[in-house]
Length: 187
Image (cartoon, rainbow, N blue to C red; front, side, top):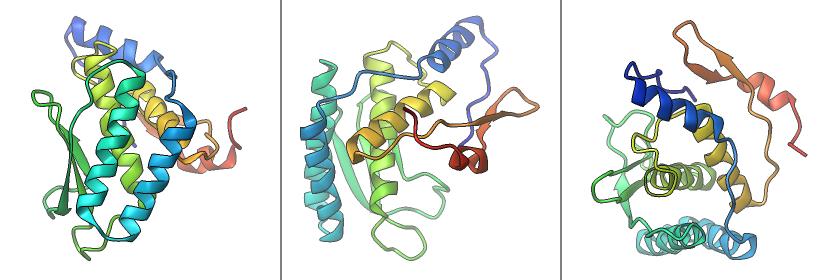
């Protein structure tokens, strides 16, 4: 994971650094969210696109309700296009629609559950940035990735690791996976 470059405009910089500092957020009720996450895993195993889409919309509604914001609709698509490199979903700023691809580009297999859920949480965090946190550009900052990871691990009931970041020459940051994996879960 790599952060976006810091914007040049003053307003963009302010938004970027505000997002970067927000490394936590309140989380939806665990029990219901985890039940939906389990339903999502089962729907993916069943290879049922309509059911996956229905569960994703329920998951989206649970997250949105906990922040008292409108739920973004989720559309689950088939095979990810080859030209959409390293992108498993997207968020439309105008319509608030989240699109997720259910199948891999090359092998056309159902996307792994962890990857699919992580993408859903990532796109939901874009929505929360825009409609709840008033971060209209929803930059990929360290804080953004931390918030998305919290939601993902909360939904899966898995331990959250401390993400170790390495600063690059251009001022962006990337995850140092080797160091991140060395550290245990946050307490």
